[in-house]
Length: 121
Image 1: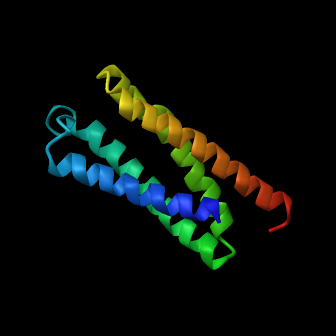
Image 2: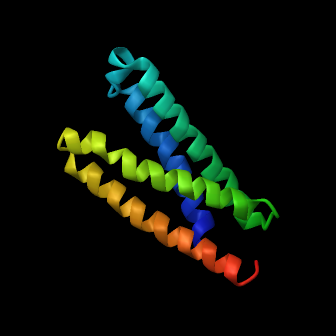
């Protein structure tokens, strides 16, 4: 159940974070590097969608949800390793720390998914 709730919460958090940054004008790269930043945002939104959908699927015990959850968790682990570089460069250490916590939780959640597979379910 942890992996399902974690997936849904992180997925919605990713949407909220980008919506907040975009609506408050805190993504200057939209003007300076639009192709790069919009592709990055698109990848994160796809990750968020997969996290939310797989989390709901895990709660509903759908046959496809475990496979989708592994995909979504892999994408999440990539993004929580890659994304904090931007904030580290700007010396925004609280956000770097947040990503570190999300990485730990994502690894724990992925381990729980593996445990579920090993138990046969």
